Image: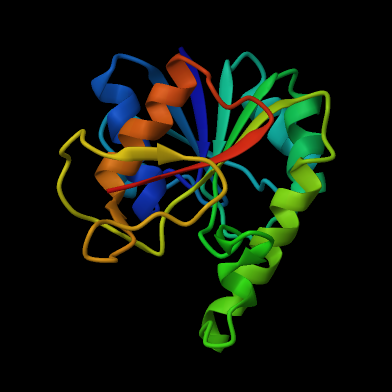
Length: 203
């Protein structure tokens, strides 16, 4: 498949790119500056601004899937969707956030009184991004939330899949490596099971 990744040089995006290449897919990376030296080996890096829908549309034309690993504080769902539609791409997968996952029925992690204030700059627009996606009926979108702890680590291939609830292991730790998250993302790209849905993965 032909996969375009917005933010392919970032922590999550680079691991998704590496997993896609490992599986034999073709990957282009889109960033404001096309610095091939920092792109994962095998990724064709293109210069473009996802906040400019017409520009993005031209860069992604002919791709099968767009993956957005951009920060929610810098890119709104409506802007991204406009570019994806303009490029004629039908599928969009988004590296989501954990803050919109439920800790109890109708209560999200973001709602908790001890949610760190410094994380809200990304968490609040992330929750809004998901809400906006849920109103979208033309593009086959998927919003994939990581658990509370999301960092580089081992590629084990072992994890659980959930829907809208924050998941934790037997020790109460809510975590996954970016490498295993990337496996789940590529599984979803290759065999879609969550079209126009949010889902999550964790150990």
